[in-house]
Every structure is written in C-alpha cells, then in structure tokens.
Length: 131
Image 1 (spheres, rainbow, N blue to C red):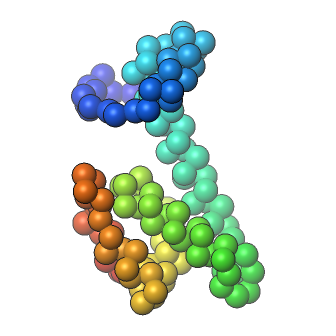
Image 2: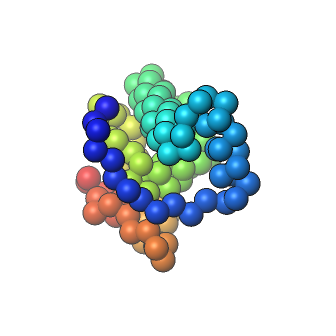
C-alpha cells in the first residue's frame, strides 16, 4: 500500500457514518482506514461478481441459460450503474465486457446510457458500445 493518500470530501448519511465509526472502533482502526478497507473489500467483491459472470458466459449463451432473460437485463443494469460510477475494472473480464457491450448496443438500452447525474460524470467509455 502506498503512503500517499488522496483527500476527498465525502457526504454520508449520519446513520451510515455512525455504523462505520462503530466498525472502525471494533477493528481498532481510524474511520478513514475503515472507509478505505470497506472500499477495497467492495472492489474485491465486484471483481468476484465479474469472475462469476465470466464463468456463466463461458458455459452458456446468457447469464441464466440458453435465452436472454430478466437475469441478463438486471445484471446489465447493475453493471451499468457501477460502470457509470467508474467502479468496473474490465481487465481480465473480456467475456463479461463483450456480453455487456452487446447490451449497450441494443436500442432499448441506449436511453439508460444517455442519462446523467447532476454531480457525477461517467467515464469517457460509458456510452461507447465498443469500449
């Protein structure tokens, strides 16, 4: 772990912040260290989910079987949110990336990709089908 840290203002619900403080105290960490630990764990979990989708796509045409289903639509929508926030590391997940790119290219999915949040802008690749 590098010694340099990026300072970042963070708005958090007071109840969530209190829960983070309790976890930090239980783990004998500072709140900042607890937040960093939580973020690292979330990234590991996200990578594990991408690994699982890679596995599914390697063994069948779609997430839940031989035809596209609500499971594919739900997974693609969730991945779209994470991708919008810049939280997806596509390295080593070519199967899932190709599957997601197929959804991004569908006319019915395009309006989702054009929506924007006021404060958060997506990565440059977000709207690109071939990213």
